Length: 221
Image 1 (cartoon, rainbow, N blue to C red):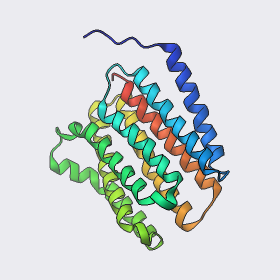
Image 2 (image 1 turned 45 degrees about the vertical axis):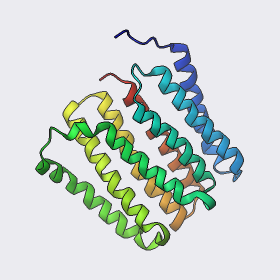
Image 3 (image 1 turned 90 degrees about the horizontal axis):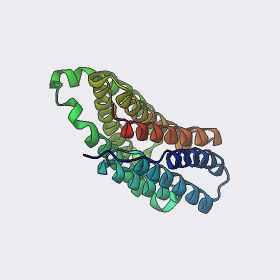
Image 4 (image 1 turned 120 degrees about the vertical axis):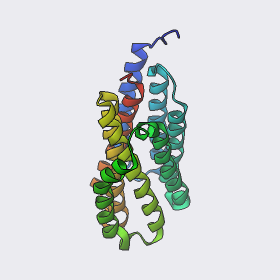
């Protein structure tokens, strides 16, 4: 198969714009201007999509779907008063799609190994869920499902890292590890202790995590 040519100038251009747009998001979310926030978030994820299509040697269509769903879910979260549950559903669906991308990495591991490595992740999730349970009355089921899917995703990414032990697997693991941490900060900000600092931090974490996963998707090994 002929190697796909990558335009380095375009890659540098889109990468720079992505980080600039991500920084702009951190400022915009503190303003309370929903239309401006919607526009900036939309542009930021479109830039990441263009960057991926420009950089990848081979397109992973599951990942493209994830990027599209991320665009929609971020847009819905901006207007969460009307579309909060729909946005949460897409967020959970995206985590499941990430699992599909790397599910093959666990096929070499016996069930006993999976259960053994799952113990610490299940324990940490249980402690966090018990703490947050009483505060998230309207989304308890969503939080539980999100936690279960996130545990599976982190577990699979960890086993993938142990198996392959390369930069590609490391970037993916770090990216999916950041997601649930950002989820917890989001929940704290929305239901327990509203703070603009939490808002800025968890947005920063989401965009860093997405970039790390993007890097894992374009590396050969």
